[in-house]
Image (cartoon, rainbow, N blue to C red; front, side, top):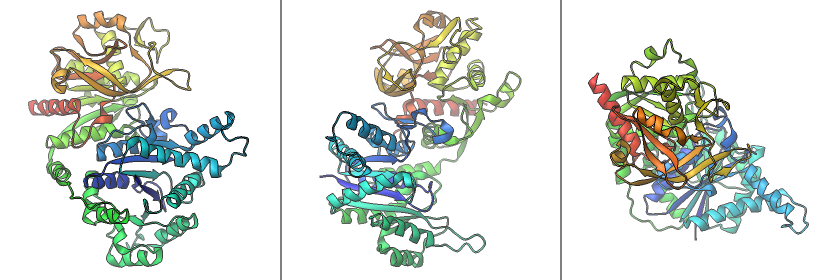
Length: 534
């Protein structure tokens, strides 16, 4: 039977519930347990798929095509497990399902209420995740902060789960222990009040994780223990670290894994954290610089490209390089400045995006990398616009475009193609989740993967228009990866270029710190070679 761990947050948002949850998942997995993770988001949107990246950061896509919160990226990178749509539950999803059932008469004419109908639907999603994943432990993070009106149904639902499974449920509360400016004295009062708020909702925390810039002393722990009725050994600090992958090791040093095993009556199996520790030690030794230029539309919020930057930096660490990401807003690139602005790049990456804003700058970045033989990696929109740029400047199709930006272009290099894709509520289609890709022989990408066929995650609406493929091949474009089932272009590369790879899928979603994605590894290796040749 599965055990359940619920993580709540207090005082303020953004204190690291997601990293704490992912770290707990890591240390429990290193105890030989199967772990599955969930995120409950209190917003009424069905998912973050239609939100601006400036509102919610990146949209992380699961293998089965769910558009989810970026915290799921942290979960997957830490526990190295592929999650599913059962991992991402929003208020919008819950209410949509309750209303669907009500219209079908599933409640037999009863008045539909938050309790029991909404809370039962929330609970069902927890129990379904346990059944489908067959995991030993389900770790569920509750978004927002205790006291938020939006999260109350979720809090009530997990209270009921504890009531139904008292020996198999554990509550972890994360709080801020702030320092008073000037004296730098740490104050526990916000934690005390947050704990009381949680208690007023019927939940007693088993463990408190404190986030603070200062060191949480035994004296502070004793005070929190006294006022919050939590043993001092169950009060741990989420320390500030130079590397987020060190957080699991910090929690382990404080005995958190031991305490969780004890509380949930789980076997105290030997730990296997050695490989993770070696990885962290290796990453910390990385000291040689590497300058990667990220040219994008949403660079004002770095979280919009969270998985991309993690994949880049992790690949850099693995190669002994400390990556400096130079964030370039594509709207600021133009014909007059792009060569100067990009001249010091060891490599250039253009990640995904949507819409017309800033696309000329994205194409200038691709053009510069193509002409100057600078390593280039285009992801999704970065591939589509690389082809548009080539069509304009090598094929002479000056009005070439994607129909996403110009519906009436005479040369629709990128267009909406009829595919078996998800129909979304915006009236278009999205290709979401895992799709297969056959790699061609004698190509760089096949050399990187060392496989004939790969499976990668997608999130896009437009595809390469196959009727232009012969023209592109005449100027050295290699269509190196194809989805054979629907005859769709998945990857391209350029002949006579040291590294110019672009893909329709999002490889950043499956890159792990301990399993670097082949394209990111090749990209970093090419960047290192470029730097050494300067």
